[in-house]
Image (cartoon, rainbow, N blue to C red):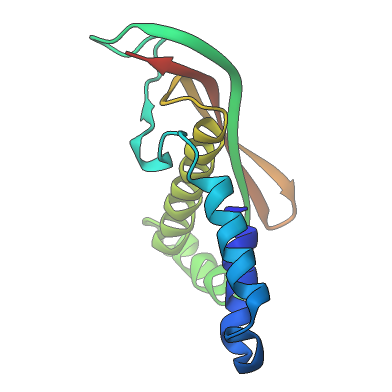
Length: 148
């Protein structure tokens, strides 16, 4: 409902007739009811690459949590990266692209874990793979747990 509600609210906000409609109010109430249950906030989810959170005990397991994103290269960045490859050095545009992709994957795994009722993810792993020429996937996965 998070991304759907944002997209739908954007549509409603851009249409002045619907902006004041009862449909918008009932849609908002429905999404708020669905998202204000006693689930932990995605920003409150803790991560650990080990099998536990130091100083905390696991009280429940919620299964695998995952988050991924697929990003493509920009033609302009490809051209500049090609020149940079010839002279050497860091490909900063690709570094930034991958940093953003990792952040998006981490945000998505946090939302997935929170939607399952977890407040932590243990055994966190990040992997990347080539999906097609010029497109890469960053996948974050781990075990969603409740810790005390």
